[in-house]
Image 1 (cartoon, rainbow, N blue to C red):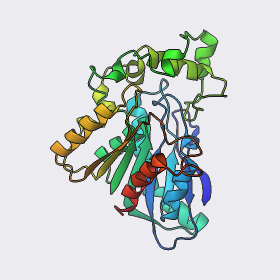
Image 2: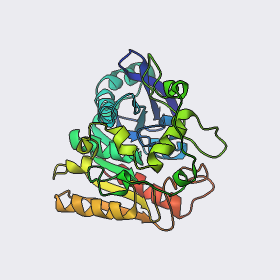
Image 3: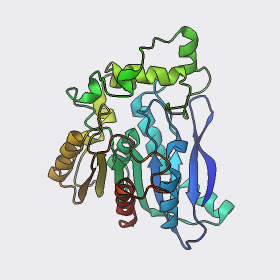
Length: 313
C-alpha cells in the first residue's frame, strides 16, 4: 500500500489542512474513490485514527482511500467541520485526480465514490451523502438524531470513560491551547490508556459527561445543521450502519441505529442494512488486533461493512 499526505484546503488563517491518500499499485485502470472520515465527536481526532487494516482492505479492492482531516470545534462550529468534509469530496473528485495522475500515475474514477466513517465520522459520511453523489456509504456506530434534544447526545452520562473522568475547568492558558491563535486545529490525538491527556482531551470528556457536547458543537442551537437525518430522501445512496449491540456513548446506540434504519427505509432509500455486532460497544473495531490476529466476529462485521462499499462500485 502506498500512502501520502496532501494538503486539500487551508484554514481561515491560511494553514494547510491535510488528507491521507492511500492506494495499491497492484490494481490497474481507473480507481474508485473511498472517502473515510475519522471520529472524535468533532472535537478531537485525525486521519491517523483510521485502522490501517481497513484502509489496506479497501486499497486491495482497487480503491484510492482518502482520509481528510477537518477543522475541530470550538474554533469552528460542527456545521463548518462537516462543510470541510464535503469540501474534501469536491477536492477528491477534481483537483486530486490531476495530481495523482501527474505525481503517481494513478487514475481516479470520479464517478465511483463511496464514503464511510467511524462515530461522528459516520455522521460526516451521512452528511456528505445528503449533499453530494455517492454510490454507497457505511457508517460505523454513527452519532444519530442530533436534532432531537430528547436523545442521549443532549444528556449527561455516567458511561465510561466519561463518567470516570474528573471535572475539568480549563485555565486561561489551557484554553489557549484548545483555541490557539493563528491556526484552526484540524488534527488532535484521541485520548486513551497510556496517553497523557491534554487540555483538549480533558475538556472533551467534561462536556460530554455533563451533556454539553452539542451546545459546544453548534452554539447557535441549529442542531439540524449537524444532523443529516433531517435531510433524508429517496436520493440517498445505499446505506449500511454497523452498530455495537451494547454501545452506550451519547448519541450512538443500537436503539438509535434501529430508529435510523426505519427512517431511511420509510423515506424511500432503496437499500438500507443494519449490521448489529453482538456484545460490542463503541469503537469495537479500533484495536490493532481486529483484522490482524483477531479475525472473529468483530472483524467479520467490519469486513461486511467494507464489502458493502466494494459491491456498490
